[in-house]
Length: 132
Image 1 (cartoon, rainbow, N blue to C red):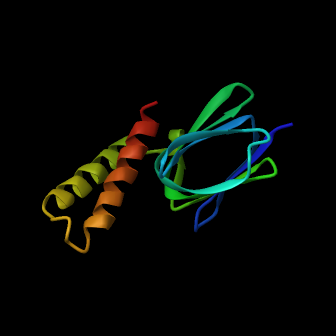
Image 2: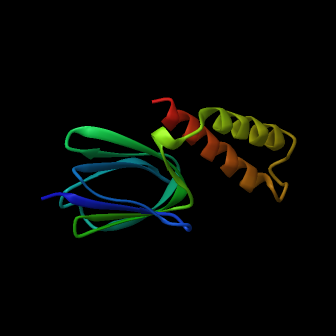
């Protein structure tokens, strides 16, 4: 028996695959899912989503979202999702620096602060995943 993993963004279905394990960046901390996991739903932070298929790890940078587990099916509704091999590292580094620069010029009370903070986290996740 195995898990079915579906990763979906607002633009498209990114991935649908049978896996042995999923590890994700939950809002309350990282967690793992294996076959027959108890049903639950949680918010995801920007970060690394890893799945194991046949003993091999595959990595995705996700930009936050939600994850649901039920009946050996894991559904990830992600703001963004990008496979490690598809990430343009130089572009991610530029995006990180640009967002970091904008964030440093703001106060936490600035209405754009949450959006810039999220951009920094997404870019950092992309850099981290691509570097692996």
